[in-house]
Image (cartoon, rainbow, N blue to C red; front, side, top):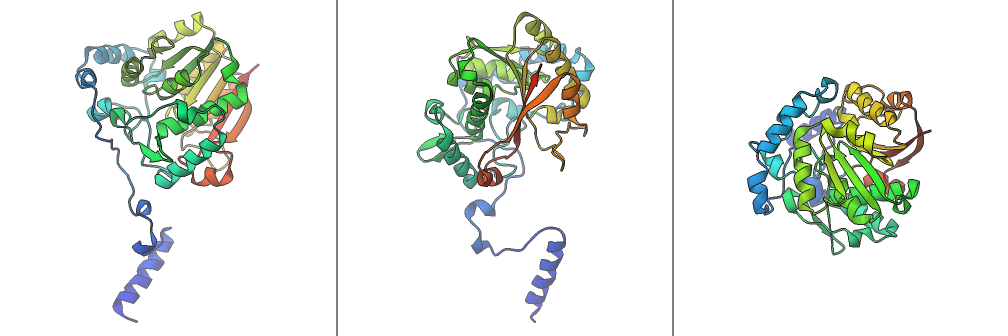
Length: 339
C-alpha cells in the first residue's frame, strides 16, 4: 500500500469517528461543494432614502433604544439579540442572510432545497399566491429564479405560513382580521399577508428589540402598507391590546431565542386580553421528544398551557415527507387555542 493510500485510509477512518465522510469532489454537485457559514447579503442597489435613514445615528433609532432600555427587564434582557447582533450592514441590508432570516445557511438552504420548496408550493397554491406576491432583491435579499418565478426564503416561507393559517382558521374569510405579530422582525410576514389578504383590517407588528421596530417602521412604509399595518413599540403594546380585539397572535422563530421569563411575559399579556389563537413556529430549539424549548432550555409548551392555551394543531412545515426532509429549513407549525 502506498503512503498516499495508507494516509487516505487512516484519515477516512478518523473522520468517520467524527461523523464525516471523504467524498471525491467530482461526485458532488456545485451546490454541494460550497457552504455558507457567515452572515452575508446580496449587493443590491439601495433606495436613496435608505442610505440616509437606515443609520445607527438616526434620531428615531436612538429614541427607541432609550425608551426600550427603560422597559421591564424581563422582556429586554436578551439572550440572543444583544448589542451588536444587528450591525450597520444589517441595518441597511436587513433582508440579507443575517439574524432576521437565514437564507444560505442552515438545513437545505441551497438551490435544490429552494427548487423543491417552490414546486411543492406550486402544488398547493390554490389562491395563486406565487403569482400574486412579487419578489425583489431590495435590501440585500437573496433571490432565485425557479420555473421563471423569482423566489426567496422570505416569499416561500410567508406563502407556506399563510396556507397553514388558511387551512386551520380560514383566515381569508374572517372579516376585518386583526393580527398581532410578536417578534415581527423587519415586517416580512406583515408585507406578505397584507398583500395576499384584502380582509386584513390591521396587522400589528411588535418586537422587544428596538432596532427591529425601527427597521419595520421603515420597511412597511417603503412597501406602502401603512393603511393596514401598524408598528407598535414595546411600550405601547398593552394599550394596543386593550383597545383592539386581536384575532390571532403569531410568533415566528422568536420565542426560541428568548428566555422563558420573556416568553411568559408575552403569553400573560395575550391571555389577559383574550387573544383566542396563537401560532408558533419554533427555531432549532426542539429536543428529541419534540418539546419547544426557549433559548435557556425551558419547555415553552408548559408555559403555554399555564396561560390557558391548548394545542389545536401541530403539523410539519411541509406535508410531503420528502419535502419535509429536503425542503428549506424544515420545522413544525403549532396552533394553540384559548377557551
